[in-house]
Length: 253
Length: 308
Image (cartoon, rainbow over all chains, first blue to last red; front, side):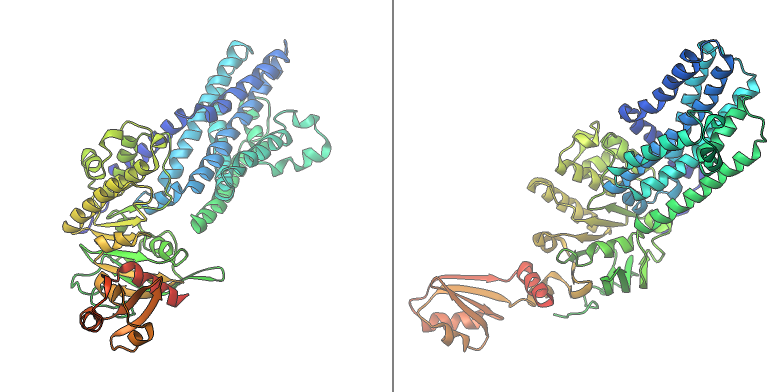
């Protein structure tokens, strides 16, 4: 038995692709966990962007921006938060570390799933906004919104990973919700920021979701500020939470 | 019998060892999980790692798999650091609680795992070796405990490993499945695969192991072949009904101990033949004679009792 040669990159790429494929199958076969993530943003859009908005065209656009931000928080928070906690507790994560799996394959598979969900949420929201909300955006604006959503997935994947690296499988859903709902409210995704108490406006820059909201509202033309500060903030949050989570996972498996 | 790690059985091979722990120390908080442990495993060898719960067996395996780092000592897998990918492409792993995704089918799990290895075994061959050909289409979560264990065994084999790590592989298996797994392991050993096995079933170690290492409280209590370990227990047990008194027998040369319970004498002797000759000569009424060599389980009990 001679030494094993290093794997050529197409074989490595096949590992990443197949792991992502099977992650997709896992999600597809447990629709109960995935469906709420797709249904809620659309449902709230119907409520606040269509029914309550009436003839107010501005509101139909504004709610599109804020629900887009609200929607892409969940695939990362829940997909990673619950998924990693369960895999960690049941020992799958340890097995993957013992097997010759490139360390990033597991995380990348879950991240691709979160991005796929973001895309689906975008499609659902866009359809509702155009057909029922009467929203008309320029192609570049749609593209900007999709980009904001894609980027916005990342910090919440990292936060989800941090939850999954620490919480038990039982505690993870509660913890994810405890972050999801208050943060989306405090970040002005439910009530516009300028209608919030002064104190809450002042602490808003603490929340990753606030930057995401700024970015998606800017994409749909509801905010004027430059795009780079929220982009930088979202990337920074991603890096910090990711580093914390990986450090934790390295130590405990 | 030698009570240190470097016995004839462990360094018999001339070839470089596939897996090495040398003077390894690992602590969890205040608890010493491993304290100066040496292990080495060569091609075609099965090493059984025995010890009571908390002895450090799982820690030793976790070190060799690169799951944790040692504080001191050397850990090598195929001459490399097990935390890198290359040596792990040459091993197969069956952990104690490595639960797999319930919703994936057995065939899918096999394909996914085989994909991690450079030269995987064909799916049908793995299924055949592990005896799971009939459940390939079923979701993992719907299988019985024994079937799940066999699927995990198939996953351990699928990369054509040169070395197998099996952490209590037969827990939850029925007798037929266990014998089948043993037969597969013997065949793999014959092909030159090395196997590191932990088990609570001493007959499993007795049936398969070239070399046994007994751990307790993070130290190697004994290491050697099954024969060598057996010898460290008082060689042979003789049981009989006899008119001879316990005290008389205790004074005989070659008798290590003698107990009497419900009229039946139990003698522990190193060499049974001289004692037996004298017993039969001195007591014509002797009855219900039974002679049995001490097994690994007696040796294990004695060894770990001394350590406690």
